[in-house]
Length: 359
Image (cartoon, rainbow, N blue to C red; front, side, top):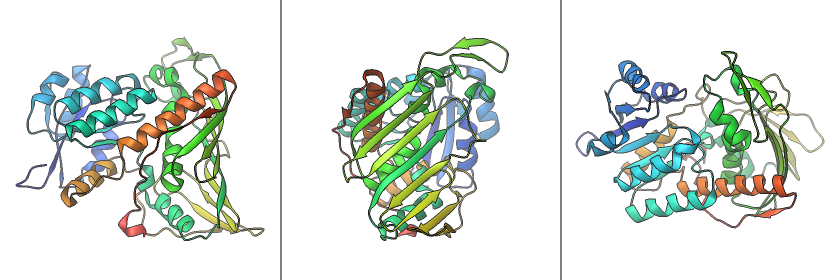
């Protein structure tokens, strides 16, 4: 962070589909300076900085050599995350990465350990637990409005990526579990703490697909996975993920069911999700949010929160340790689905505190 101006200087690695939304949501914040970007396709980086400012770096090496860069914002494809994060931490940079932190728990754990060794901050998406709707739901749970929460239904019905994304291949290589299952798992582990066991089923429902350009492709990673995840506090989560049907479905968001009542959150991603509460045996009624919500998802909130944490000398709320734990959950689900047996989860992390405005 620039000690004179108090600004956090951020450089982007990977200027694909999500880079624009990050940059747009960072615009209003004077404490964040976008200093530049790099991409394996140079023209994408050039187009990005032409629109959002900063300079184009010819390579990751060149970006990391720039002493003015405080934080690397890693927006590369899933398979590149470990290499980019490792190189960035070794170069003495703090990192915020898109999800998942890694594709295997040993790799994720190694990244957390490297960040600690280097004395650097490692933050990872998803950060939607920082949203107004999500923080409101969490406060209702903490206050005991639901009683003991024993069951949660998390729905990730994300549809056919090729219908809208220009490069669907990497998404199908990892599947919906690793790409979007991380969202509700991060929210739920924030609210209730670590997981301890997973039992799952997975299947390729629709193996032969066609891109927007009419190019056929075949998938072998399950595009449908359903899992029962047992948390250490006793809560059981049923997680459903798919890349087959999407936003027109009627199963969305997360349902929390407790001894005294149930809470429905219409989206684990949107900060302005609808919340409804029903006492046991009664009808659902709307729940007002604790403050005016951001419309949709404020992607840059992770960097804003990191900037505030650095200024206050405290840990940021989105941590590598929690992201690594979620990767272990994903690995356990994938193994269970493949081998047909329950799989233990052993790692731990310190859950983040609620936002100050939601206490």
